[in-house]
Each structure stands twice: as C-alpha cells, then as structure tokens.
Length: 120
Ligand SMILES: [Zn+2]
Image 1 (cartoon, rainbow, N blue to C red):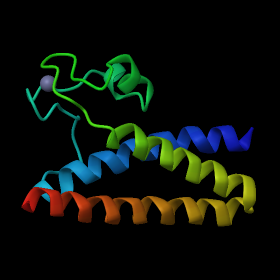
Image 2: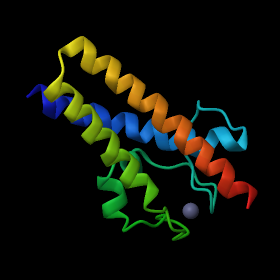
Image 3: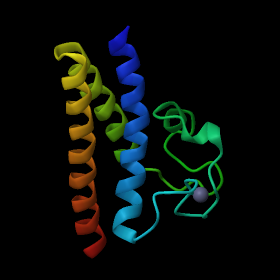
Image 4: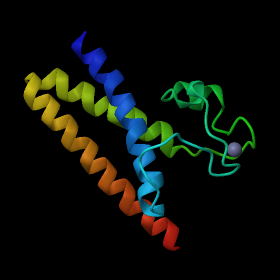
C-alpha cells in the first residue's frame, strides 16, 4: 500500500516538476495557478489531475486546442515510477530522500533542456 501512495505522491510531484520546467526558464513565479500558454486561460482543477487530465483532453487545451505535449504525462509518470521504486526498495527515510533528490534532478535536467529549446 505504501508503494501505491508513493506513486500518487510521485504523480503530484511530477506535476510540480512540469510547472517548474515551464516557468523557471521564463522567469515566472512557481506560485499561482497554471495556465495555458496558448490562450492564457487559468486551468480548472479538473484539468490539473496528473496523467488523467492529459488523457481526457487528448493532449490539447480545452479552450484553444493547443497541444500540451508528451513531456507532461511522461514527467508525471516518471516521477510516479521513481517514487514507487524508491519506496519499494529502500527504508522509508532513504526512500523519501531519494524521491526528493529525484525531483531536484528532474527539475534541473528539465529546466536545462527547456532553456536550450527556448534559445533555438
Ligand atoms: Zn489554451
């Protein structure tokens, strides 16, 4: 059961990682509601459920149909897998530390890649 909860927390942290990857390279705050980059509409709560919202919306904004991109569900699922693996293989404190480290690494790598794509 702990592994299932860890995966759910991983999905939530994956959503945070995506927000950080989107906002940090653009100098935007990590606080505040998520919005569509195409139409600037603030997203509803049901549009922020990791993976499920992406699937329900078929990868597009509900208002302007702009593509959300595969990175969003891939990062969310990747974080869920990392959290589940950590909590299935390690003692709880070590798993929590490994999960936190994996989030930090995912943010650093994602921000670096996003900055490169913004430059080109
Ligand atoms: Zn939109």
